[in-house]
Image 1 (cartoon, rainbow, N blue to C red):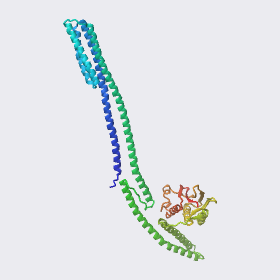
Image 2 (tube, rainbow, N blue to C red; image 1 turned 120 degrees about the horizontal axis):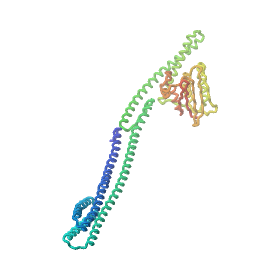
Image 3 (cartoon, helix red, strand yellow; image 1 turned 180 degrees about the vertical axis):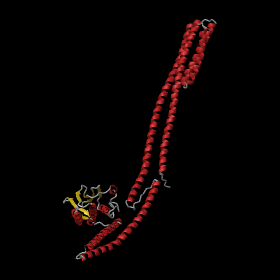
Image 4 (cartoon, rainbow, N blue to C red; image 1 turned 90 degrees about the vertical axis):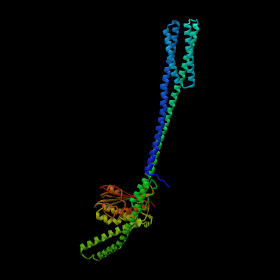
Length: 479
């Protein structure tokens, strides 16, 4: 089964992936912050309290030793009572330090301190008994032993303090490393989240926009009347269904367009012969009645002849269009002088130019190279463009034909008039089928002109200056 992700599923999947990355970042950051908090608590609480306890303990031991010396010298019981009270404080502080000491070296040093302090107390108590019993002993030797013992205890406590300090320094370095690592990992996860977001944004925009652009391009082609074009979109499913609906609509429009073209072709073909007969009959009637002086009747016959000619030209355009759309139009491309072709077309329209007093100027170099055209089809092209120029140019107006050679092996022909110009909403679709200018004509002349030029390998376009006329330009390949 070929599973296709819908647009909704793609967006949901993108959001879930980004959300997972963000959640991972949050969990990792939370764990590292908790670890940092524990280390900080250990440094701030345990470190400060242990230092304070050790310093207080050293000071208390020194003070206690002072009470002992004063008692020995003065035999004052108050000093001995102060000495006894200090024992409780010292034991309590030693117990507090035992709680902080979490390493083997610290515990051993602390145990040595406790052992040394116990021996110190025992020696003091023995000395007090000797004093009470009035036994003689060497006071100097006793004092030296006690000072040495107290010094050893304080030295052990200082070693414990240094170990705790070193441990705090290690924890500070560890916290710095954890902080740096957390910042690094957070930056990596953030960058990864950004990359994933950009990837999914690009992926979604590409997989959604490209089908949409294909659909838009296909609808524009269909809007131009090329109903045979099919829009091929495989995913997403929503746009695929829309493309299939457009393709079905295009098939129906193609069927309707074929029916319309067949109907117009058949009707045009049926009208062509009767109109030709009417035209010839009117011409014969005019020729046979030239000697008569009925000017009004003669004028009516001329009008009928002109209208028949116009209708025949319209029918010919429709038949010509039918052959082009059916792909049955043949072009006999050959080497021709562009100047001769243009001059012949100007000669054909000269009576109309004289009738409207329109000035036509031809700007063309005699040394231009020949072009590769079908002279019959090209003549029809010029008739259509000149016909529009004359139609919308007022009496005593001006038409200018400019022919120049371009650098890319093409010759450019521009036909300008001083007519009413073309509105902006019409200029973009003026070459489409059945688009008329100012509701005048059949709307086929410029469409046929475009098809003829494209069949010759050239291009046609129009530039406009509203209220001051327009310029139709096209290119032809050099032979």
